[in-house]
Length: 425
Ligand SMILES: NC(=O)N[C@@H](CC(=O)O)C(=O)O
Ligand SMILES: [Zn+2]
Ligand SMILES: [Zn+2]
Image 1 (cartoon, helix red, strand yellow):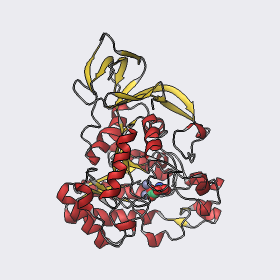
Image 2 (cartoon, rainbow, N blue to C red):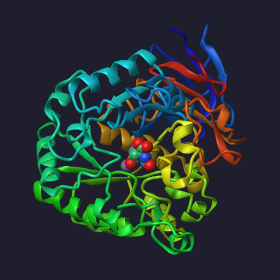
Image 3 (spheres, rainbow, N blue to C red):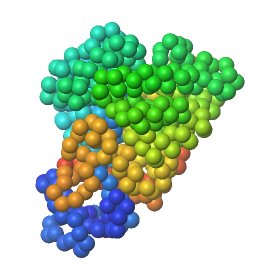
Image 4 (cartoon, rainbow, N blue to C red):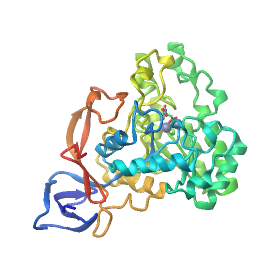
């Protein structure tokens, strides 16, 4: 194991200092450190953040290794500054048993680029009919604590209630994809002026808001933890604000794309902009940004959703929903929040680590803390080139766009996974 001496970096936006990374931890922090034999990293002008944590990643393995594998998705994550990702359960087979979550967990360990924490399905096969073996997944080597049918809504209120009650025993959380299915049948994009103009079937905001309203009431009733995936509307923010004011144990995430892109992009008919929930309006974006700043929305999660070419390069109506996120998330958030490093660390590292129960992550670098870190160059600008992404898929909505910020290095337990902006393995 080598030692690394990071020279002149700003720790979460504070005055520049040096950090010695050795034996998996941040061994020393202070100005003018000099350590014989350490690999020197010139970090003048760079910001050190606790390694980013993504609560919502689709890795596609097992089943769609052509779109992404645990390894390729882990590499994309490391390049995006992440040291831990939570892998969604909508694989094939579905991650609804101890066997599948252990397989994903093991593949993550073997890749060794980020900690891959599997999410377990709430219902068998994501079919919304019977509860999956939540206890067995929790007791497995993967120690699952987050359960989600993401891609589908747990629409049956009785099942949702039972799931919430069940996970209480091991302080688990149900992460809901809030979409009332009866209100989104045949939906192609956000229901509003643009959908009317384009003649596409709309996905109304109320389909999301109605489920969140129901679920915060259920979570309140049974005293359990609820997490709301990819919040996309101003109305959802208001429901969450009221629930939090009452003390309901609810947390919520927003994706980078819902903070930046609007339903107007559907007018291109380019399926790269097709996503669930759909891109909304400028009014929604303003409400989401305000909620992220004031804490009604707790975290940014990528909902990294790789899709193979044949599932995206087709007519809008036939294209799968979802877009890549891991390699561009920090840049989008930097663009949206500005160089507000403490807030960025809170929303992209500390709080997601706490929600997921990842004790080794989301910790600001200080002597003795696990060296899960990322080094960001805030002054850099880069043009996104889809073909250069580490993901196996190419469905980024930002191709050709110039974005601020660049990940220079990422460390997982003291070992670099990214150096000079390139993956180490
Ligand atoms: N976000 C998406 O549009 N798609 C996700 C599923 C999901 O997050 O609902 C996927 O798995 O492709
Ligand atoms: Zn979803
Ligand atoms: Zn998702």
